Amino acid sequence: ETGVTQTPRHLVMGMTNKKSLKCEQHLGHNAMYWYKQSAKKPLELMFVYNFKEQTENNSVPSRFSPECPNSSHLFLHLHTLQPEDSALYLCASSQDFTGGLYNEQFFGPGTRLTVL
Amino acid sequence: AQRVTQPEKLLSVFKGAPVELKCNYSYSGSPELFWYVQYSRQRLQLLLRHISRESIKGFTADLNKGETSFHLKKPFAQEEDSAMYYCALGDRGSTLGRLYFGRGTQLTVWP
Image 1 (cartoon, each protein chain N blue to C red):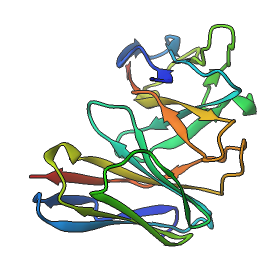
Image 2 (image 1 turned 135 degrees about the vertical axis):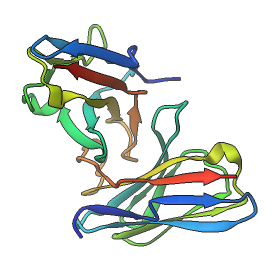
Image 3 (image 1 turned 90 degrees about the horizontal axis):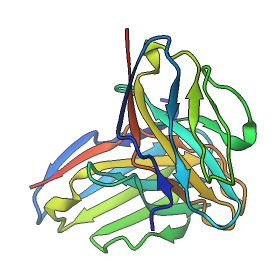
């Protein structure tokens, strides 16, 4: 499959569960991103990885834990989430980020997360 | 502080009418502005960026630094333009690749 894929597409979990979201990109990119899209707020950047190194943590609670084992894969580990964490979680990738130069970000379809 | 403002959550026009989706930003440095679009049941994708100065699908957007605006325009809207449109701002002074998104405007083009 080409582009950016995300699994699962839908996830329902309880507050005490531990789950992981997976993102994979087949574009040869070096930068990957996690975004949160909820009904009441604009699209929010959560984490940025550039060449497998985390370059941004946008004050995200520790119950969200990202992992980037290589430039093609990005995970978001979830534990003890709250109902307000229910949202669409989007993964994106871009060629890379060299200060001051923006490359197009390619988005995945998202994972719809519901926390009960 | 919100850096990107899209004042209209919903916008409806008839086919063939001009359409303008508004975007205002606040940023003190040298911004890079984008429009992303999400069609029904499709993923978010880049529509255009100000540095390209190109027209995509009949849409254009001009960066007005004096008014800190980057409005998206099309002279004759088509039904297939119905989608969610997001304005986004990139921080050229950043080494992090961060993009700030507006809340989005849902455009509906009626036949």
